Image (cartoon, rainbow, N blue to C red; front, side):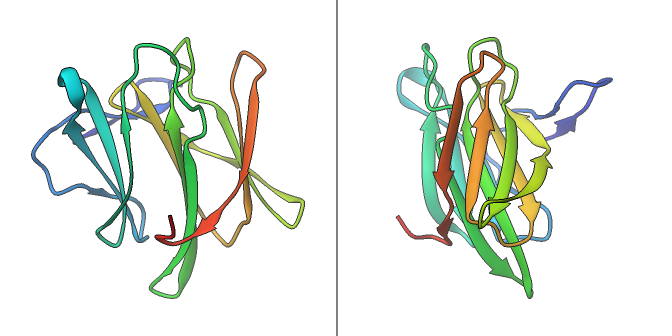
Length: 147
């Protein structure tokens, strides 16, 4: 799995099957690519090795914001959010907030051309993903590996 960042384009994670996963920052989060049904690309999301979610590439737009979790690792709080890329392939603008105070926009990373992920340090309770088409999805951030 490699990261590319040509010019001003969003950072991308290229597909590399058969790895143990890519740790994200100094955090409990990692992702791994897998082969889904009908040969479609799948993104697995982990917290300290515990599988949280599996997203399978969809021919039609999937959930722009699929999930978000917060956790502590080595005394540092962090949050991870993930979802499917919206139509057009541009990742959404992702913001995290705590008790209705905006924390700012997080950098999103395109993964395997089908998904996006965003991580940020700190303790937040809400995430909002705003797609270029104007659609907005917001949800509460759950703790750790809760389902």
